Length: 156
Image (cartoon, rainbow, N blue to C red; front, top):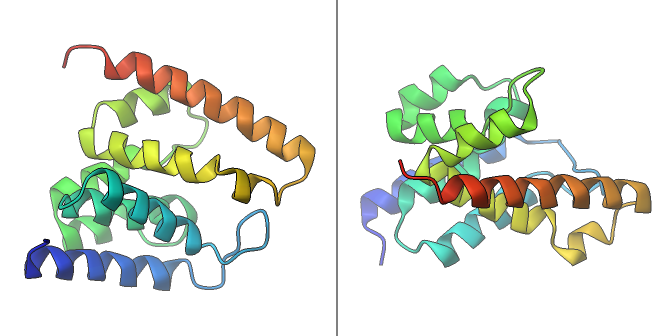
């Protein structure tokens, strides 16, 4: 059972993500916050009691997709969570494999990225997309899984 501090941390992350993603929708027209919510649930299922990973799951797209800056995350949540969010945040013109290497180097980000991919490849979710988008994303995530699995086997 999570501690009161852990519950408060997760609640603060959920609240920030909800505010930051307000009004955003995904490719299928669903409220965007449903994606971080699903990723947080997957992380909770796979890593129960890991409050920092669950908070990162809530916040994983905030810096990339909203006007919230990493400095705000760091000030509000500390270095461990900010570093995980930073690892999850794609850079402009970044090669995918460089991004996956950065994710794999952070154990919390890696756990969240695996949950992110699981949600992004959920057949119920992908069925709402047009076939070309579905095929493009399937190839993207297949490659991501392969690279992350290879990186995960390397000694650190």
